[in-house]
Length: 394
Image 1 (cartoon, rainbow, N blue to C red):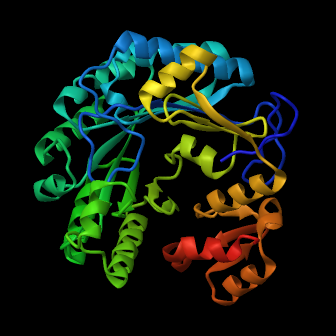
Image 2: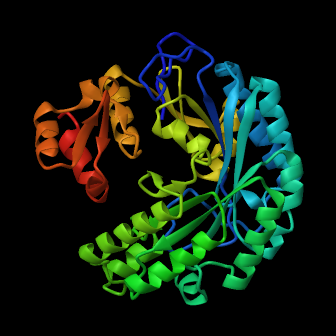
Image 3: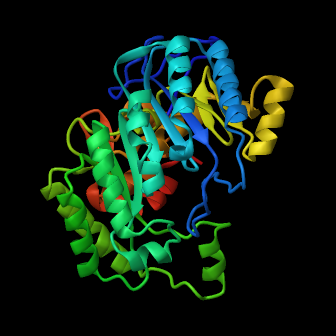
């Protein structure tokens, strides 16, 4: 996700080949919209439910936070913008347009900039898709999450399957690029059921899929249910089989995994997320947003009300800005980059790698060197967290 020099305002990111780049290095912008209609039981993202949202206040506040980042880090152009949440499709298209216009004014746009917005597949939000496309959004990430009504109810989703598929049709008509999410390894779901669901998902013709195994995150309603024994854990062997089915089917369909949970046709990978995983500079605005710029890690206040108060008081929503040492950056580059099929240039992560741990992982066939790059073997992706723990220098 990011690497910077100590020189104020000058990025020296490393590209995927480990070469230094100057101020024209790809720059990504993340904008967080924190509000949702309801809180899903599996979700640990920074999302909040409010009875009412002052849309004018929030538009002006996000524009102010954006302007602060531009004054602090004026180098452009932007290669990608990502509206995340929360549920950004609840934003008025006029607000989205104002933020895109301000971003272009502050940094300029690289040719073919990718502008993604996360959306829920409700009919109300789908009705805004044409206006969001007119505002400048050219890629949408749709939170379908499942392709049957029983699973959607279990996941606490507000939409049903018919409504979700109608929203997908609308999205494919409105945007040049469409991705959608599915969650698998749900309790009681067989391998055959997941294979059928994934085959159906692949038949819709989108160029990108994000496929996540259900994980029980601390602080969620699912975590509380699991603690009481009311939500069974997924058997590891069953989870491994589901993962292998996922890799085989997506590869055969021309959407191989380019990251542990993300699959795309060649050229349709998420440019924005690649900026994180390849450790390129990115800016974050809005409640809870993170950034990496000028050798610092930035974090905004998470609670919407606290973020607004900080913005009014300080002219920005930052709660913490931490200088990153060379070793910090090397470790982050290692942890992020090995999520990718392409891995990382070995030279850029070597200082963060424990030689004994690397030798052990190589002997076990879980990591390998491909030319000048270090990659996790396909079988190792199932054990990525354990591999990273072994590789990271104490």
